[in-house]
Every structure is written in C-alpha cells, then in structure tokens.
Image 1 (tube, helix red, strand yellow):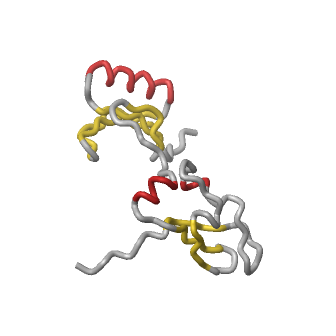
Image 2: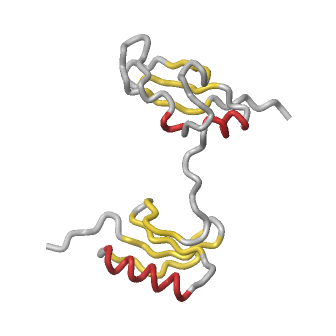
Image 3: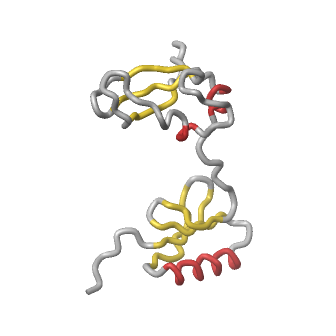
Length: 136
C-alpha cells in the first residue's frame, strides 16, 4: 500500500529557462490543477507550469511552437535528412524531395513510411543533415 510515485505533478514558476520556485509537488491530478489555478491567480504575468514528469500539462506565458517544419529547417540551410536503420545499421542521406517532404510538414512526420534498402526494416531513425560549419 502506498508505493513511491514515479512522476508526481509539479507546479513551478519560471524565469526564462530556469525554475525560480516550486510551489507544489502532489500525486493527485485534481489537487494539482487546483494548485495551478491558484498559482496563476496569485502570480499574474508570471510563467507558471503544471508538469507530470517532463510533460507540461498546463502553462501560462510562452507556448511551445512544436517541432520544426521542413520549411524552417530549409531556412537554416538543411538540405537533406540523415537516416539510420536500427535493424541493420545502414545509414544514408536523402534530400527532402526524395523523402517526399513538403515545406509545411513537421519534421517528426517526415519519412514515416520509409524502408531500409538493405534489409527492408522500417525502424528508421532520422535527424536533419545540418550543414558543416566552416572553420573560423
């Protein structure tokens, strides 16, 4: 009875990218929501979050923009996607056109139906193929 809670709910106040105050750590979601609502009322204009582990349940202030789009990555000079097959280890680079990516596609959605050309595996890891930095 009464085991350890792996990921309690936390209500925190942020300044920039740092937690400046932890207001509550609770195990009940109803209590957590009530504490979050009270914190927002008592701290107008402050960035307050309600988290469960790393996941943000509710927040005031800035809103996450989500994953980047292919168009955004292209504006950062990324011209391709680097791929690895987690089944056989083969890797390669494909252009955005070769993976069928449109500019408004979110990067995590790109290449969901790709198969490894060596083993046929579908467990493909991907990341943007960032341009090499020129020496300074």
